Length: 412
Image 1 (cartoon, rainbow, N blue to C red):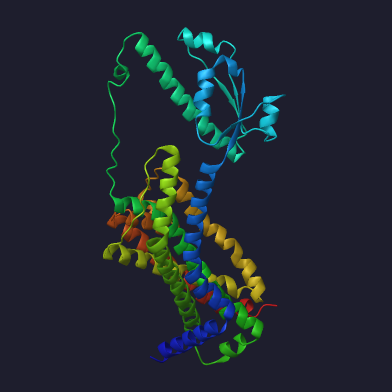
Image 2 (image 1 turned 60 degrees about the horizontal axis):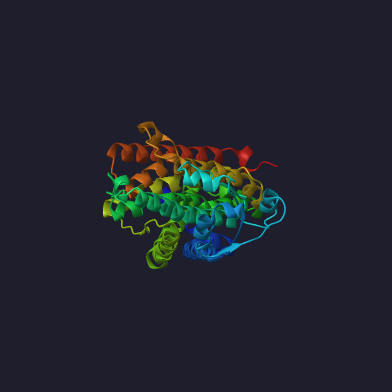
C-alpha cells in the first residue's frame, strides 16, 4: 500500500509539472484538439479549390497540319476552356517553355487514312510536370472521343449498319461493399497514423521533463535520495507519461471525428463531385461508424501502444543530460515509427500473415485497418494485443533497469 501511494504521489507530481509547462500543454493537449479539425477542413477545402481551379483553367493548344483534319480540330475546339494558339517554331520547345500546354501533330496523310478506314495515330506533346498540360490532355482526349464517335456514325450510316452492333456485350459495375466498409477503408489510411503519431508526441515532453528535465534542474538527485524504491519512481513517471500520451490520443481522435463528421465529409463529397463532373466518374461518399466492440479493440490496442512508447521515451530521455539533447535523441524515433505506417498504407492488397501481427507498431496499424473495415479476426486481435502487452512490459522493465544505473542517471 505504501509503494502504491508513492507511485501515485510521483504520478500526481509529474502531471502537475506537465500542466504548468506551457510547452507540454500546447503540444500534448491544445495542439491535437485544434490541429485535427483545421487539418481536415484545410486539406478538404484546398482539394476542392484545386479541382475547381483545374476545371476553370484555360489551356493553350496548337495544331500542326490542322488542315488535314478540320473535323477533328472542330471537335477539340468545342471542348470547354481551350485556346487555340498559332505557333511558329519548334512545338517541343514551346511545350517545354510553357508557351503552350499541349501540341497536336496531325499526320500529313490523316485525311486519306481516315477515308480508307485505316488506323491513324496522333502525336500529342506536353510537359507532364506542368499541371495544365495534364488538363489539356484530358480535354484533347474528350474531343478525340467525340470525333471518333462522329467518324463511326458516318461509317455505319454509309454501310447501313446498326451502331449497336459494337455493343453486343456491356457491363454494369456494382460495388458490393457497404457504405460503412468504404468509410472504414478511407479512415484506415489516416486513423492509424494519427494514433501512432500522438502516442509519441503526446508523451514526449512529459517523458523528457520527467528525466532529462529533472537532470537539468538538478532535482533528480533529491528524488533519488528519498526513501522511495527506484521501481516506484520509474512507475510513477511512466504512468504520468502514459496518462498525457493517452489523453493526447483521445483528444486527437475526438477532434478527428468532429472534423470528419461535421465538416470533412461534406467537403470531401464536394471534392468528389467536382472530380466526377470533370471525369465522368462516380462521386465518393465518406461515411463511417464504429461498433462498441470495435471501439473497445481500438482502445485496447492503443492503450498498450501508448504504454510501450511511454516506457521507450522515458528510457531514451534519461540518457540525455539536457532537454535539448533528449529531443535530438527522440527525433529519429519518429522515422522508425512512421515507416511501418507508410509501408502498410502503400502496399496494394496486402494480406498479412499471422506473424505480422506480432511486429511492434505494424501489428497495431494492421489491426486498426481490419477493425475499421469491420473484420474481426480474433487470432489477429489476440496476437496483436498479447504482443503489445509483452513489448510494454519489456519496455517498462528496461526503463526500471536504466534508472537503477547510477552511471546513466548522473553521467557527465
